[in-house]
Image (cartoon, rainbow, N blue to C red; front, side, top):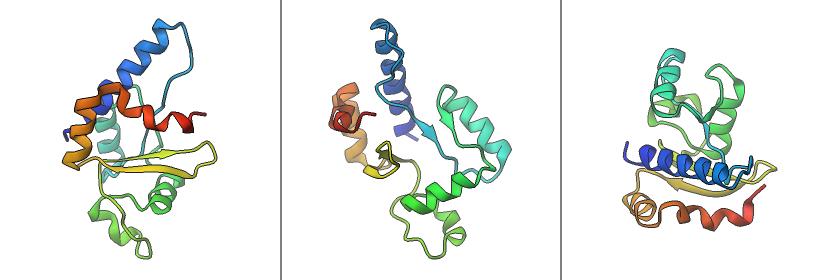
Length: 133
């Protein structure tokens, strides 16, 4: 719960910087993949906490395909992915290349990750500049 507000602040700063530079290209884009139990929970949580972020629809097959591909899902979902090794729970940030391959995976419950974001602010994302689309 600590990481999401930090990521939201970074996202907001990136939007402001793009607007200040009169540039329509965001530095990064966030795509929310829900692990909520119901569609209603997903929509409510997204609206309250991630209003401007892109979201994979709750009923879209892509939602589970991404979880399986990257091994990132809530512990309560493990039975939905019996042959998939769970690499991380929620929240997790997966940075991907344009071709969909993984660049980085961050377990955002980690105090080290939270501390790094708090310390570096927007420069936290500089390490991914090489993967910019």
